[in-house]
Length: 167
Image 1 (cartoon, rainbow, N blue to C red):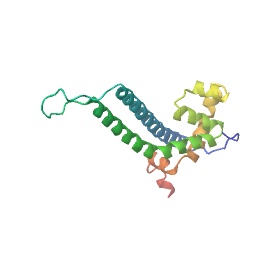
Image 2: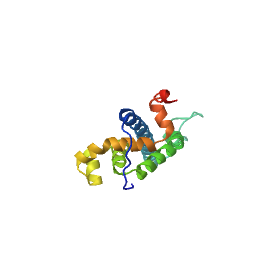
Image 3: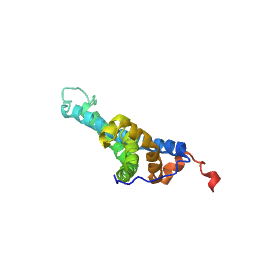
Image 4: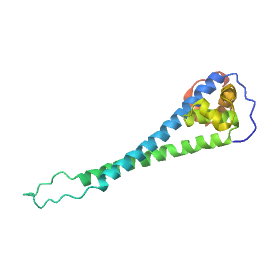
């Protein structure tokens, strides 16, 4: 977090705010999906840990019965594959969002904490050492700063034709 606050143009602050919200909401969703899959894998591993293989010798014929161990391992493999796909898809976007947060001045950093980490404005204010009123007043400059640093593609995705009159 650097100490200088840029003087952005607030002419289109509503568009900037909504684009920032949409981008950070997507990144936060990706991060939650990865963590959710990690928890599901850990739960599946915990369930499999106590299982033992099934002894089929007492069963007549050659029929195969229900094997909880095999099913548990299959679930873990399936969840692990989903996790790998999700991480491959999300890791760059998540890292980029945190890099933007680290490069922002205080207003931008506050906006990032509020939307990316899901903190309430009061908690953000306590963290950065400002009053809640000051943080809330500076949020427009924060949205403009984050907007200027966010990926171009995320800006275009939020409002696909918003810059049509400038082309």
